[in-house]
Amino acid sequence: MKSTAKSELYRKLPSVNEATYSSAVTSLAAGYGRESAVDAVRVVLARLRQEITSGLLGEGALDLALSGLADAVEKQLRQSLSYSLRPVINATGVILHTNLGRAPLGDAALEHIRETAASYSNLEFDLESGERGKRDVHVDRLFRKLLSSDLVEAESPASAAALRAGGTAEAAVSTPATIATQAQVSTPAVSTIVVNNNAAAVLLALNSLADGGEVIVSRGELVEIGGSFRIPDVMVKSGAILREVGTTNRTRVADYEQAITDRTRLLLRVHRSNFEITGFTEQASTAELVALARRRGIPLMEDLGSGALFDLRSIGISGEPGVLDGLRSGVGIVTYSGDKLLGGPQAGLISGGSELIRRMRSNSLFRALRVDKLIYAALEATLLAYVQHDHDAIPTLRMMRLAKDAIGERAEALAARVATPKLRVEGIDGESILGGGAAPSSILPTRLLALTCEGLSADELAARLRASDPPIIARVEDGRVLLDLRTVFPEQDEALESALATIGRDA
Ligand SMILES: *Cc1c(COP(=O)(O)O)cnc(C)c1O
Image (cartoon, rainbow, N blue to C red; front, side, top):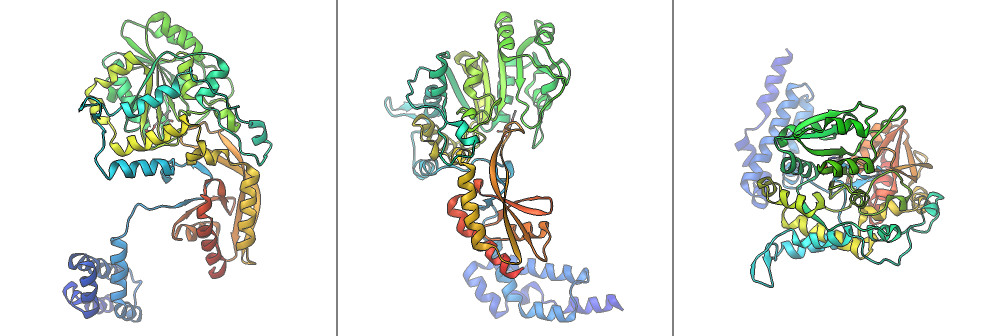
């Protein structure tokens, strides 16, 4: 009985041809192109067929759907011809959110991409000699400035205390130059090369320095980063042989020393990006490892992961080693990401002594892992902002330095404009998260907006926010939706307000 009814419903569906030649769809085809229109007709009819099969469409609903066929086809056409990759509003408070594209780029970076990529450029062309040049010169010169300590810097370092106290004054950021001036130490000449991401940087470094030989790593540092980057697996791909030492919770410098043989090519330290080991723990200090590496003539490499180019202490976060910390303490090679704490485009950076870097540059893997001109343009602009101490030009740095009170004021103002009896909005204390492989404890105090909406669960409310245009991504905690304006650009406040007003009205 039921299946007969279904077969009658199927018969009501027009063929793709019939539907395409109906007058409404024909005019759509004139606007969007026949091929796209036919594809859209196919998708819409297949969906109706599917809905009949699953019993979702009765006769009345099907008649209604068929009368609106042209509209459905147009909607499908628009959707299929619009971008899949699109901007979203990040209201999660996770500053370097890997799923949301990590660091947003600043205006200077975008403008530099536009001006160099829309035209020809001197990417690999030496304008002076008129001969072939190297693409890495464009950023190596800036890394040299940032990673050598002979710059004189008058600017005073940040007032982290004021920030922790929730003061409204914006904290300044200490950069390597300021740190170095304070510490009065100098680093030897450092070179930097750029590859596709930090995973590629680790692969290239291991392959260049340790192919066929052994690399000593603590068992407490055999980490997995999200997206299936596992140190032991990368080691296998690089051709190096992993030599684990110590235990999960305790590894001493003597453990490294005892494992050294004539096959040892590298000592490797890996930053525990996404977890902490607490309790009965011990880790060889960087100074001890540097001394061991020097004594035995074996290079020491540190995979920093996030690798900040500014002093995190200036925003009240301690215990996260920066790029210059590593190099200054004598680590031979450091690897880090371009789009984590550095705040630039996706890239993997390898900084270290010129001889070790030269070995990586001459590896044919380097050619396979290299980055394009768009990345060089964005990276050069980002580094130039560091050199000029223009930290506000780097969006993630600006977000990290926002004071809790300033975020709170914006949040209160927004709450006052959108709250309705149905949509309750409350300001509460909370934490923003650095993310992107900074230690799990790397958090900043913030003010959150906690939302509840009559008739909607927290998950349903979060789904409504995601369905807004642009989509709004929020945190859901304890049956509430939480919004953190730290990661929302002020120019997005209006879109956020209108989405919330719509939900408050229609819910
Ligand atoms: C994030 C991270 C990586 C991977 O970096 P990508 O730039 O995402 O490839 C590798 N090692 C550590 C320690 C990290 O934190």
